[in-house]
Image 1 (tube, one colour):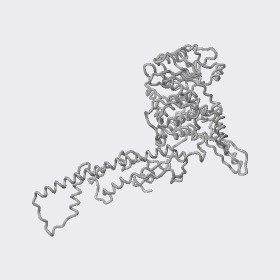
Image 2 (cartoon, helix red, strand yellow):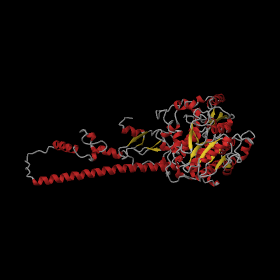
Image 3 (cartoon, helix red, strand yellow):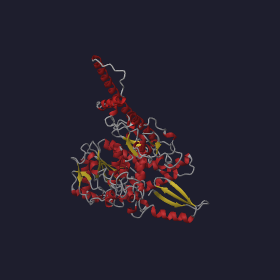
Image 4 (cartoon, one colour):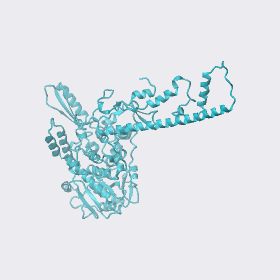
Length: 639
């Protein structure tokens, strides 16, 4: 599913070359000695990489290598009602509309849409009919100052058509915010594109008809321009031996960074307006591409919740999946019109990365998190991004037939943590739109270029240091409690000994006879019974271990148990910088996560560290990553 295109190159002296380009920006050329065999491989891949039927996608056959997580995990992580409840909706101004329960009002919208309380049934139906694809204005975000972001598609206004109910609908949205007597309507298209659509009976809102609105064009180019732009970026990255000027000129002529800046600029305008208490209605042509980009990015800037791992996933569920971004068409999951394919979601991730680069402490997740998302949007390994809208996904019964990406990611959260994250530092953040601050995302578009990436990302090194410190601090806590327990026991023993000595001096003691024998076994048994009846703070009773439940087996003596506790935590962790391969021979590159075993301190790949157990030497008792060898030792299992 990752294959974007397959091309048979002219015959060479070594054989027949086959160039495969992937949606993850990996390009591979296979040289097959026989031309006939190359042609067979070529025709097979052509049939397989883009199935005709959506039911032939990989997600319907995928099974995890082992039972990592059940099929139902992840599908219930996010509910639209819960996300709006998080924004305190419904309330006195906004209500849940039940008219789309069977997708009769708009089949590309979610079943639950939130509209102004003032909106009547006639207003909703008429507004839906007056908007392209029936996508009437609906709430997507309510800020804590009552300013809102609503999204819709372009009106079918032509040159002079109008709809009174649609005008009333926008006025009802404006009235939900008592702090301002006007609101913005943002058309994300360039003005010339919107005017061209008027000739086809579509267009934009006329300020003469819509009262109390301020209309803005904010000029993001359409899907065809973005697709061509990305193609030029890839050509710039694939130059055989690029010079500085050749690469920079190719990147400049692609216009890609200009488009990224344009999307951030529009998102910033919306976020600033809402932050000032002004409501915004946003649309493009059909309201599922540029609208999804700028509405979600504006929320990312406004609300710190969406900058957490869970919040970012919820944002994608709400503004991309529920509100009908056409993932199957834009990502080319199945055979479709090639002109429908466009990197809209890739741009959204790029813009998020730009914000992360500028404000790294504001995001809980790291670059790897975004790359995993990008990979699996295109891989079709999970059913999360299959289909074009919520109705499609319900019809396909994806929650019953496929695994969820969110379920898979929940098992790997430790790989996505940003060690620099500081929660609650800033309520809202702003993008720096200076041209010098918009960067080329080398980690995405030149991801598979060898020699241009550091072997260990700085974030991984910081996270590793943080985890090592946490392990040592946890171990120190355990040792501190152990030492305190020992001190307490010794002081009690000393007091008992002192009392016994005092008592002995007041009594007349019997003189031992020369022939009396000191019975060691009797003394040992007597001491054992005393220790068994000792107080609960006896140091050897911790961790479910006491003389009361120990047999007289030599192997279960206390020194060994204490030694196991102390040696169960690795004090020194091997340096990441000197490790190029895992013990299983898997090579480490700049994107494979190196993970330390908390018990032995050695470095392993993700496949070799698949167990989490609590270490006896940690006070918290939290499960931590250990390698398979250490896990077997702890479970007393033979290799």
